[in-house]
Image 1: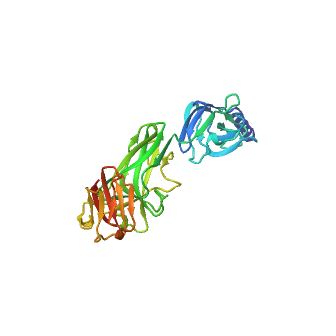
Image 2: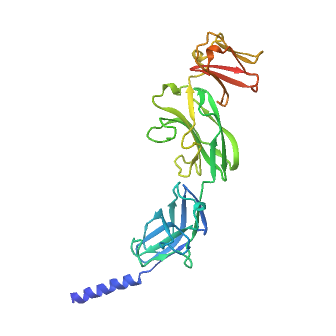
Image 3: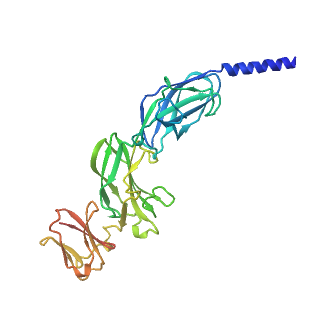
Length: 350
């Protein structure tokens, strides 16, 4: 009796395994486009009479219906969730595309396809698979570069006095409205933002810019009067971080920044201009409106003298201050300028 019951259970188990059903269909756009560094969510519907293993993967091939064949190249973009039993279940899968993922335009004779399947076990080599291909063809996916870019157009390095604003020039291109982030950070390496050596500051501006091509614009950073000056830093410097992203998210993977070969512009924060101790005395340095010249007297205590416009761009440099009596500035446009030397400043109007 026990033997007969055991045989019956075996038969029932075999029958259930043999008649188990599962199916999956792809419900998103075909073809679909995604930006490298972003994630994409795909819709699908499945039916399964048991818990099943799933596999979703982007693969490269020269045959739209071959996955795992001789022409297919697997990628690191793969997800293997386990799905519960259900009938006509509508679900989604998110694939994260790495920022360094090869773009579709860089492929030679191949393209990216999206593979999706269910199997009786979480086993990529299962023979009892159900896939979402249509007529043996998998959905096409195109991986593109981010549709936005940004460049830094001001001087590098640049100087600003604590307690004063500084306006920086940049150019951007964006096919959509994008979030921006501009920040001064402290680091011992110009290319590290948010790393172990970086210290964030309270100077953060996050405007949203509208779509446009080669848009030249500015951002203003207000430097608090109590901001630590650059000379007080130990083993580090201040750098200026600027980026665009697809959402208002400082940690977005789909960022583009204005670094040049990984290095960010340097900014030197000097003492507050309005403090008399840091302003040149008129017997040392002054601007002569009649001659449109900056007069340098022998009593000046400086080893060098730099002249900046209000954008922080250095427009003139005097390296031999002791042997220079005056600097002719008649060629400059009328406006406000700042003469800086070591920790001293002079504001003057040309």
